[in-house]
Image (cartoon, rainbow, N blue to C red; front, side, top):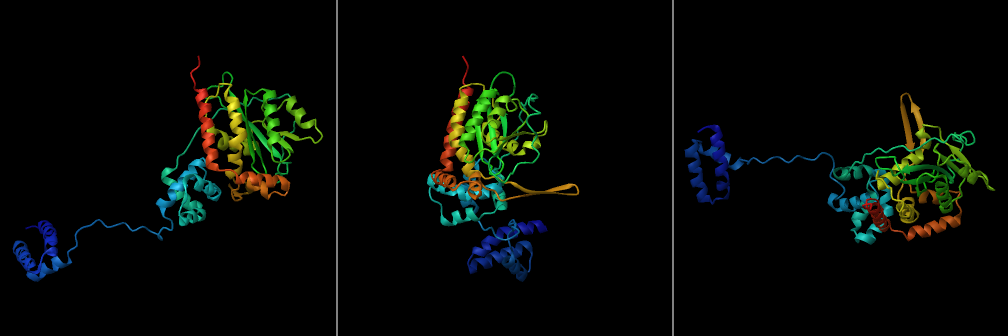
Length: 387
């Protein structure tokens, strides 16, 4: 009998020998010694010490996990998806803001799960969400046509603004043109306050001067602070006499500036919001039905602004240092525009109190649900067959 055969026979006999009575073990041992021609003591040692082949478990390196992955992954994933896929550092700040609303919608969670979600680190969030992360990619089309008429009258912004004080806006337009720039379609006028990150959006049909100015005037009325400065790109929808008179011919003129031509970095704040606050939601679809404009404005002026300004934190660049070929950037901790307003010494206490009372009445999950319903109506209207 070959060594391999003896090994296979030992595996077959082992379980019988282990479970047998004393008398039966003697019979099995005699049979084993006769078949394999082993000495009796050697056979006893083999049957006693034999270990069946079991695939060894790979021992996980490092310390034991602190969190119960299955318990916290479900609420973590729901909040992450409802908040429109934020990065882990922003999601860390979002969790304590959104948990009260989550408990109202989905019911109570065990106390240890709530504590774990509040104490969880961004690195752990990345590790838990790694299997479910989805990457979105897309590039749009630029529709900025230079307005040369007023370039000399409107100065280029050269960092003269006090960016620590609320009231200085950057503005841009986002084209909902789909695959073609031909014909008429809807645009979104996007504005962001540099100091607080407070954003406002409005829809217009085309890029007419009067339509854009009317929406900017409406945005100014809805801001929780006075407008002090307005900075835009060189598009003709901004560089025109209507908007210039609107900002300069008043008791307290608004500082009206523009960026350098073909330098998107001059409007870095609003370019980033064009993606997170417009493109991520509306995509690159063609909205060429004029009836979508009132629907979008109803959405923008209600749930949209509340959702983004009260429940979506962002980071601000604090310092930038160039060392040799590397640029080291430092950011502050993520905060919502509402939180930055509450911390600002330039905002009146009455405004802060009104915003605080409003924030207590809001639920981000209900706002998100209402937004999705209105967006569904917008897309249904745009893709409705034309007669």
